[in-house]
Image (tube, rainbow, N blue to C red):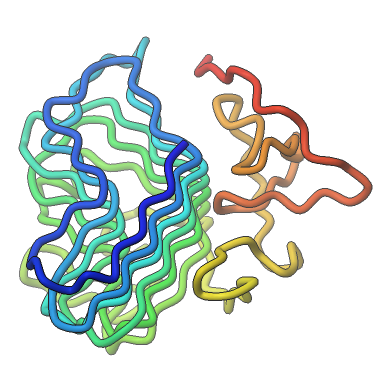
Length: 245
């Protein structure tokens, strides 16, 4: 659990969390990343690469990542290097702001194996993409049940192809069949807890993300996408060990 804040706009390519050759069993969770840049690019959580097994994968869950940038690119979640395999990216909240037409909430650079992206809130208000990935990366990626929004002309970029909408993305890739476009209201740009659960619930409970960012028990039938779970009449619980089964 870390809080990483950076408004010192001096270094291009700032990496808030950079995992180099992360291995099986690594869990990245409950991190808050808030980057406020005007001129330089930045990434939130980056793997170069993440190498694990189906039995003991890498899990990235319950993180809140906000990047404001006016540079050519900014990526809250980035997976690079062709060796990346067996990584589960679930129940994270990502917000991009500023003016960055090349930005993407999730950027996957090289061929991967069994990269799962599900139950996330992915908002790009910087004029860029929700998803940006190469064709080999897309072939090894499973993505669904995400709540998404973007202010750019195109929804995604697949290789050199511009994908104009979520509907075209689904048709082209057969991914995100159950993902939805929604307008999300956060407490503030600096606090990515959600104000309401009304439009963010997904019928996709994951047994490896039982609790949320604050330690609250998630719904066993229709949890909130993203890092924050709103449960009526429930006090936050201590975060317990969660496992993939």
